[in-house]
Length: 193
Image (cartoon, rainbow, N blue to C red; front, side, top):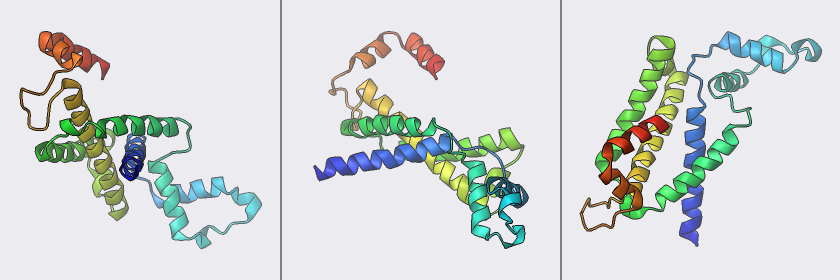
């Protein structure tokens, strides 16, 4: 029972990490925008808040909200859905990928965040602008790496591949369909994504 609870908690935490990563806004927040947002949120005119007396950590939290606007309703169900999916994938122990796939997932996570930064901002400032952005970029890279690794793990489970890659592992219906029509299966998978 203890192992099952640990697995569920791990899947839930990883699901939250992936949902937060997928909801990240690729932007470089600045102090002035954060301070202006803080004043709007605290209704500056009615509270008499002194802008210069605002603690730095409070403005940093507002900056964090500019990158991860989690005040919408959709990220909660997305995190729960990802947690259920990750719990199922992590239960497929015989299909767990090797370390090579883990390294490739990390590389893909890094490439995804750097590519999003170039696509949205024209440079790598989303990751390398300042220490705050480095932390946000590393968080997003970790989230995408977890997502890619578990996507490979789930694909291995659907294809019926064992950890050793041996032929004696029984095939699933999906693997048999994929082997029968690999072109059609690949195009349907690409269209679904």
